[in-house]
Length: 99
Image (cartoon, rainbow, N blue to C red; front, side, top):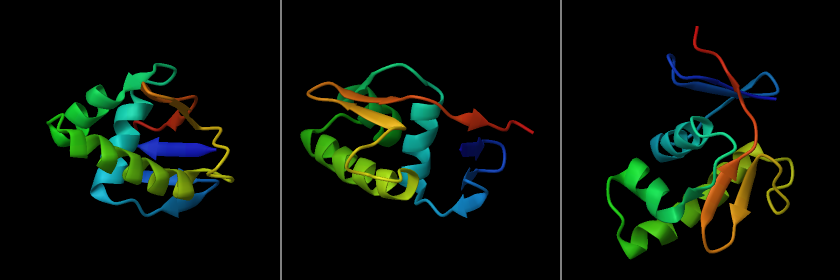
């Protein structure tokens, strides 16, 4: 399972620490804090980059693909982060470690 330690800024998948870029980590944190909710492209770009430029949505898609490659067993058929076409993304589940 995926585990995020927000206080230490660390992420593990099946006991292996993942090495995420700062943007990937920020994106993952935003999704993890909103598990089960569909976050729009605009909302995600605002929270990650602080803006909603059209090119930010293209960047969001690139970072999401990169993040999925690190998180998902099969990035082309993701189970952790779902795409809602034309709307945004939703994270389904995550274990948090606040310690």
